Image 1 (cartoon, rainbow, N blue to C red):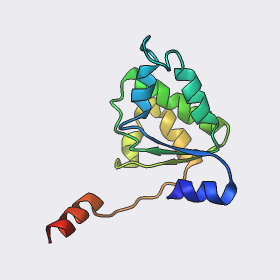
Image 2 (image 1 turned 120 degrees about the horizontal axis):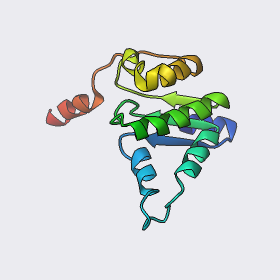
Image 3 (image 1 turned 90 degrees about the vertical axis):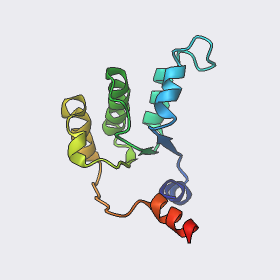
Length: 133
């Protein structure tokens, strides 16, 4: 909803990426010689770096391999350098993000984002209970 509002009110492009499902899977396919996107990992990161609005969903679900952290850092750092609007959602406490890439991702997020702590019940549990009634 937030991305739609930004796009509607500013007529500028935006993108939503889910770290849990698409982002790293897509990047991995760029290393498969049989993939139509073979060799395009940096192009994908560059495109996401330059889009005016980006929502990064499920931050913290990555496996924190060296490669995943490097790709994530490259994306966050590029958006930071260009002062692009970036919205990050996570179920993690912000303190859990501090150790990623020796604090380099955390320090950029700290400067480029307004951190909002939202305490709310899991909406999936709420809807499950409603269906059971």
